[in-house]
Image 1: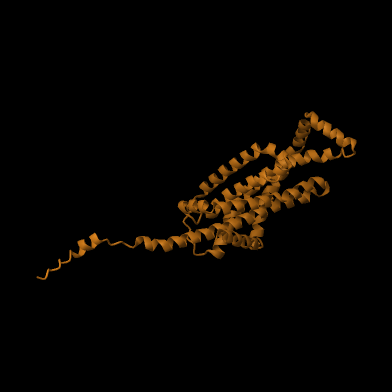
Image 2: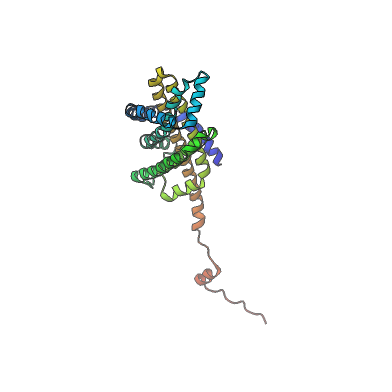
Length: 298
C-alpha cells in the first residue's frame, strides 16, 4: 500500500509541475536566489578563490601534484580546479537556501493547490502555526548544515561525495516538506502518526529529491568550465533547484494528504465499533431483575 501510494503521488506531482501556477511560483524564489547568488559572487568570489589557492599552496603534496600536471602539459587545470572547489563548498549553501525559499514561498501554495483539486472535503484542523513551521524548518536546517560541515572531509573520497550530501539534503527535505504538507490539515497527533507510520517511504521521497537536487550542480559547474555562458547557466541551475524542490513539495503534498485521508477513513470505520456498549450478564440482571427460579415438580 505504501509503495503504491508513493508511486501514485510521484506521477501526480510530475503532472502538477506543468500547471501554470506551479511554473509561475517557481520564478519568485529564482529572482530572490539570483539576487543572493549575485551578491555572494560579487562580494566574496575573488576573496574565496584567493583563500582556497593560498590554502592549497600550503600543502606540499598538492604542490607536487600541480608540478606534475605542469610537466605533462595540463598545468592549466589548476585554473579550473580552484573555482571548482569553491563551487563544491558553496553548492550546499545554495541548495539549503533554495529549499528554505521554496518551503516558505511555494509549499503553502502547493499544498493548497493539491487540496483544492484532490481533497476539497478534507478538514483543516490547523494543527501547527506558521511560527511552529518556521521553528521546525530552522531546527532541521541547522542540523543539516552541521552535518554538512562535519562530513566535508568525506567529500574528498570520490564515491562518498555522490552519497553523503544527497542523503543529508534528502533528510532535510523529508523533515521540512512532510511537516509543511501536514501543517494546515492535520492535528498534532495525526502528523506524528503519519510521520511515524510512513517514515520509510517519506525518507525515500526525500532521498530521491535529494539526488534530483544534486543534478543542477552539473549545470552550476558548467558555468565555470564555459565562462562565456556563466551568466546564463547559473540562473538556469538555480531555477532547476527551485523546480526540483517545487516538485518535492508537490510529491510530499500528494502523499501526506492522501495518507491523512486514509488515516481518517480508518478511524471513522473503527470509531463505531469502539462505541458499542457491551452488556454484561450482571448489567442485564441489574436492569431487568433476576428471573424467577424454576419450580420443582414433585
